[in-house]
Image (cartoon, protein in one colour):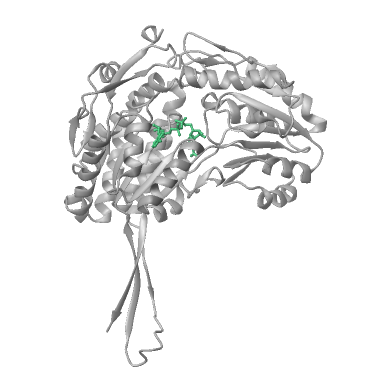
Length: 497
Ligand code: NAD
């Protein structure tokens, strides 16, 4: 199917060539010689293969990153030069935006048109925002008291220093954007990076590596290893030469990585799963709320960590809002993301398709009603946008992350009840409130246990706003000034004068 749709010659050429990993400035095969396939989820066909790295390759990449951090032109670079290099990388991504979007579409299934204006553009904007930080990393001076040395004078100051070698592991739902969320602050602060993209989606990480080289980064500053999570990912998390791990993925794997990090006292940031509530208050603009709630769950096929996957609507509007969302879902065009008319692509894999349809079937078995959608189809890994009602707050479909285009909807009667329901979940990544009652909204915001709260919008992320989770949704924050803190260490200095 993809062959019939327009695609740039360079996109086709990129997928057709033998793909290698970037280690210490060299394009490398795996030491074992092993490779692994990746697929086009819109067709289910094998799209290509990449080296399947193991611990030997990971070790080589960490050593290259260590050398670049400790002793290379990079380690001596001034902030202005780091800023300019990041800016140059953003320019190259802008030049190749269409190719990056098409690679993301072919490998992930998402719409190429949407990937260009969302994934790629947001990644570029984020790198530019982080380029600005390179020249604004500051320490502080203090006046020490030291009562036991009353006759001496001291000067105390606190340096903020790059943390070192960063091991970055990302999920498949926004391959390029998630990689840039790690790369931006790492390169702004002067760290070096070993990135492991998801097993399913290595393409844009390798294209990014090409652009990093073209931008003029010294060898070893950015390394990409491709391989499975169990092999390459686990080896990276255990490696004592890594100073910081930054992970985006499932809570289950995040817990393992957190434990592995503590073995070596490696600093760690974990961006994990979510089950975010969308709350429609009685005074809301209902049309906007229904359209917003539909986008909150169906964007990116529902494979969004902060997707609005639980909908709470005031009882007096419940039926209308659910009917409006179902109408939007039924009107969506599903298909190959290379087709600009397509509004929803396939899920990432057969495994994910089975997982999502499995949850829908579980809902049916437990007595829930499927208001629209409810089935998967092929070729490719499609699932129709689905809304499920007649569910109870304790239902597994309400408590567990499905990570697909499946919305569970429940009515509520008052604010206390809906706050209780919103917080009654192990995750705490995001939440949206749809209302024009400013006082009620402000009273609700502090009571919601999540890292982000959006009002009259959902999943609206900006580089200036820290993003991350409460509870099982993770540890630490990405974006904003908070990201700079997570990629630096503090050093206290005391000088006796
Ligand atoms: P996953 O946890 O299975 O895999 C994520 C990455 O971890 C992949 O690169 C994988 O190869 C690697 N990995 C797997 N096992 C590993 C191990 N034992 N050691 C080291 N690395 C390992 O997650 P997924 O299914 O690819 O992604 C979906 C999940 O990601 C969802 O739960 C979603 O909510 C979450 N996510 C969170 C955010 C966020 O910012 N909070 C963003 C996107 C996705």
